[in-house]
Image 1 (tube, rainbow, N blue to C red):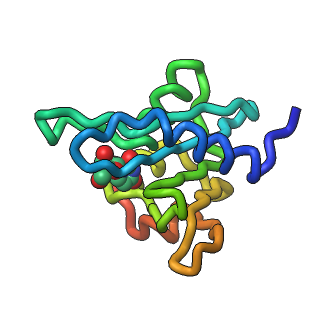
Image 2 (cartoon, rainbow, N blue to C red):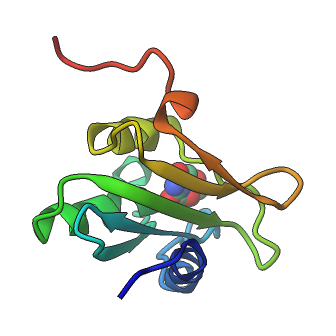
Length: 132
Ligand code: THU
């Protein structure tokens, strides 16, 4: 079964409701497809010791890795309230995505005009760090 971008966006929006965001109140959901076409989802999980909170993208990537996936083919990220304000990945998550992205990886987020926009990891994280 092929998963469309719309399916992926809907899955990201659905998992948003599972977010544990007691401190920010900001719900984030992420859904990604790996190189096998399998979907993995994650939501943000906050903690009363604030720095221990984790982002939705981190959860989806951890699920992908645990099930054997190694490359993100496409990832959709949905954040905020019902009208879904733009939620581009934070700096740390850009690096997390970069680790498992290639030049074909598509990152789907809502822009300031409330339109879905597709980015590459090179656009979101130019001059990125990688070990020599
Ligand atoms: N958050 C994410 O889950 N992903 C991002 O890329 C940006 C921020 C979460 C972290 C925190 O739980 C909440 O959004 C507010 O920053």
